[in-house]
Amino acid sequence: MPRRTADKIVAKTEPAKNLYTELGVSGLQRASNWGGTVSEEWLAELSGLRAIRKYREMRDNDYVVGAMFFAIEMLIRNVDWRVDGEDAESAEFVHSCMSDMSHAWSDFLAEILSMLTYGFSWHEIIYKRRVGEKNDPTQRSRFSDGKIGWRKIPIRAQDTLSEWRFDEDGGIQAFVQVAPPKYESVEIPIDRSLLFRVGVHKNNPEGRSLLRNAYRPWFFKKKIEEIEGIGIERDLAGIPVIWRSAELASQDAALKLIMRNLRRDEQDGLLLPLVYDESGRKLLEFELKSSPGTRQIQMSPVIARYDKAIAMTCLADFILLGQQAVGSFALADSKTAMFASSLGALLNGIADTINMHALPRLLGLNGIKLPPEKQPRIVPGDIESQNLQELGSYLTALTTAGMPLFPDEKLEAHLRAQANLPQKSEDSFATPKQKAKVPPAGPSGEAKEG
Image 1 (cartoon, one colour):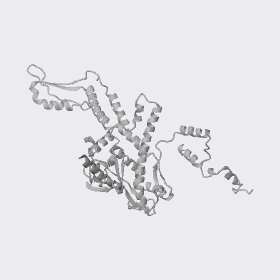
Image 2 (image 1 turned 90 degrees about the vertical axis):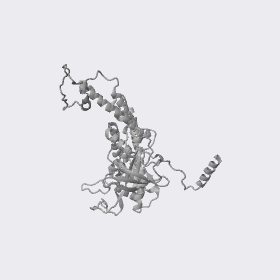
Image 3 (image 1 turned 120 degrees about the horizontal axis):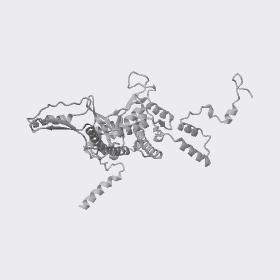
Image 4 (image 1 turned 60 degrees about the vertical axis):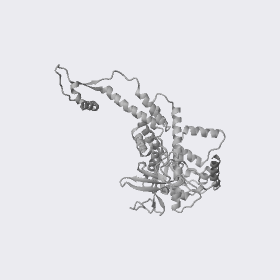
């Protein structure tokens, strides 16, 4: 038996001499070979549409998660994007397409960032013929060069996902959507789409939500806050207690309903019958029993601990530094630098997806054929602005070491941009020798003859 197994292994690996044959698979757990749902998540409440609802609840209801995502979106929206490339004409064309869509580029990025909540973000690319200002939205453009540009790149909402389509090697082929108002099944192929993901383990099209590791502390925090709210209400209002005699046992259901629904507010009140037995004792009595004292467990430190755990999963615990009595400027600076670095990596991943899939298709539709090294690339700017004090110290050190820095027009232009200073005028770029060659103007404004 072992020998037979070994023979099978050898027989299977011998054809591997063909380097273009794929032997193994990623091992992604899915419903079928060709399509269906992905079942990689072992926690039932974080699978499929239940996961989308749960992550949306975390994003919309939790103040720490909301602060994290607000900081991420605002920082990324503030980033400047540029187009680099050796071919100036094609680079200018790509840049014009970015600003000629029916939605702003920053809005497109904000929709992409939904992948942080749900793990993935699917966008369908819609094209148009650029023929100027037309009433037809499929042709309306600020340009009239007749080229094919992006009309829009809208999101296909995560909660409209019906199933995925795969090829025989496990490659992602399509997003099948069932969405309101028609609720019809529509298959959107990958060659007309862009798929953004936080994680790509096993080539999982659903990626991995940024909130996955925050789910456990969020779950406990939510429960503790609910208990805290109930406890505060009971401490302030008291615990409702109803005393009733054995003769009124048949009224227990109604009395329990009264105790459950009783709340202290501007409309609170209770109407009970005043009845006595033969001895003159009350058959029914109501009271609010107050708390005997303070609780032994303080809830605020526990909730603060879970707040920190949630923020820490996204490297965003710096947002809690101002809430605590500890923490230095240096610590905050290092934490924000790490957070900005992670956002920079996220932006580079978004740019890579666009440059790898969207730009070649756009250039191909317009018959622009360039070698890969000369194709334009969309490049994000820096998340954080340059620390001018550190930059000045670095330039001083270089100058002290003997490195000649000026005159250098490109370096000076870059330094002015870092400090948000206006660029030099064209006349100021002339060297002293060039300025000396220009004769001074006479009284009438004409140059004097030498």
